[in-house]
Amino acid sequence: MTGRGIGGRLGRPGGFAVIVVAYATALAGGWAVAELVGAEHPVPALGLGYLASALVIFVWSTAVDNGSMFDAWWSVLPPFAAVWLAAAHGPDVPGLRIVLVLVVVWVWGVRLTSNWARDWPGLDHEDWRYLELYGKGPKIVVSLTSVHLFPCVVVFLGSLPLVPALVEGTRPVGVLDWVAAVVGVGAALLEFVADEQMRRFRRVRTPGQVMDRGLWAWSRHPNYLGEILFWVSVWLFGVAAAPSWWWTLVGPLAMVGMFLGASIPMLDQRSRERRPEFAAYADRTPALVPRPPRRPR
Image 1 (cartoon, helix red, strand yellow):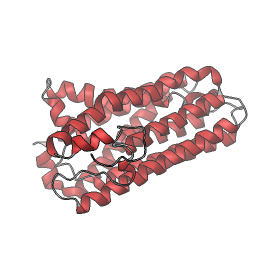
Image 2: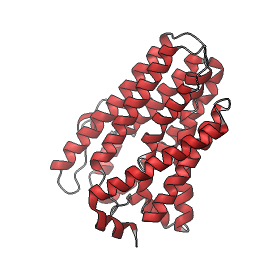
Image 3: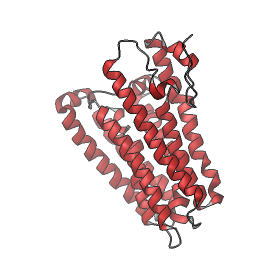
Image 4: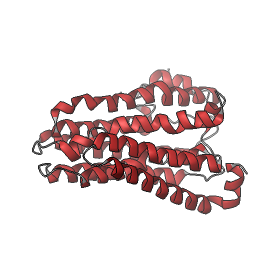
């Protein structure tokens, strides 16, 4: 039985029940592996915990024949990973910084997960990007590597600054921590406003119409810009806690590379094919970094 068949039988409420059970097992598996590695090795514990949880969701995705089972992993795992790391903090780690980091990560995670849940159609639907990827090789291999493990690696890189911020950094809370907090909450707010504007637009749009109003008049992907800024804020917390961890900038850079190299080109190409006005919109509107709207030519 395929995922579409299962989804048709369960409906949306039944599908959510499957999702909840799947993520409970993924969180339990990731937490158990992190505990096994030990808090004295926070980087391997974080990475292997993420890997274990991603593999658990991969098993569920394969069982229901739907790679979109993994979509919520991006925003569900980091908040719990932050809690695990915070519980392992050393005696000299400032408690205020731990609170600031946890607030920012949980605000972002709850907001993004709830946004996914509101629009999730059920197990009878799979993201069109995954369906395109499946045509490039054996489905189970593509699903494992491109749909599950690749995002897992990117989120692991983005999460590395949580180690100095929550476990090892002993510098007192300073201006950079507050800058990080403002950037992180601002990033979540930017994503919220962008997603709400797009949600309202979809209710009234005509076939082929391009979203070019609000934040989307300034940037073609303001939600992705907010996502990148959130991971920048995580990096700022890490540097504020321990400047020697500056190299964890690899996390935000990995996010930029993923969005500019994969996510944005795929979405823009699909829009070009489906919306005749998109080419003109793309010509006058930057992909990420916003600028004042230009009038259509």
